Length: 406
Image (cartoon, rainbow, N blue to C red):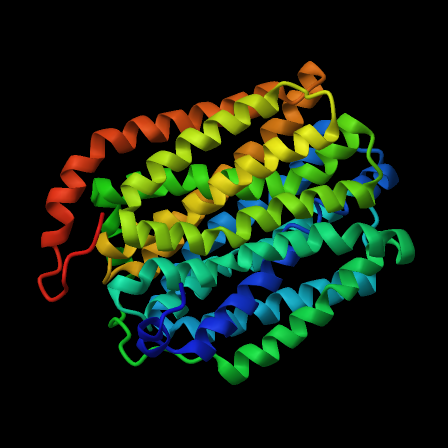
């Protein structure tokens, strides 16, 4: 998959720095989910409060992605990433030093963690601008595999919380982030060709283009499903199957690793077979998996298998969407990354919060899962209606480049 042409086409140190920055930022972005069982026990939270606790960082990260998308185009990806990392490091240090004493302070921490979630809108343009169109799917798939940081949180946070207390995990999380910041400073480099800064109002011009809204919707389903599940599954496995938080974290990590590391595969498949075809397959599989998961399965291992299947589909879809986006909005990829990433985060907020509400109101998670499965079906139908126009129009938009598969 990593051909010689690909390695020669871009800047490998920047691609690695973008991945590491993205990876460890995502680790802290969703850390309240793996710590959720311990936090809920200390502050006596109900299912809806637990759902909101893990959903707030997701929503904050979604909205801040738009801010980062604009900053990337105005001051460059590297400087934007530096500012974001310093904000998160400062927030973690203050939360650990001053302590967190109630549920509302947890939500405030969630807002700070949202800055880490907005790293998506920095890491992807940082990598994307180094690579030609024929390698966009793979390059953005590799950078976007930083989604795997959510698995690191699920894997290690419950273990560390059991040994040191959940509040100390907040402080410990700053240590790998500091390492990533140093690596980023040393290796990351802005691509030579950066788009000229625009007036702020001009950034919203892309919203006048219907294709922008469709791409936002498509990613709202794939990434929304991925991050919503990544944030919620530790609590889900604990409450539904009575698993110890550490074991529930292992189960969550398995699901997240599956969804993260297939993202480059999804991008590469989209490069080869077309983003539309790949996404169509993805949405059908995701809708099937989420529907099956909605019926409480008899064994946590069966649930693990079904949810891993769903995460594999959603993760591949994340890579496929970002094979399509640079084809349609190459000159506006910075702000489009922010907009698309924002709706991805909003999708995650919707899933995480509705799972919690469904559990509180009905006693199980079925309505939450089925609602998101319905969104996947809607995305599939919409894509079927769009594909003919996209395939005929998009290859003509950039006359200076050879057309590739839509």
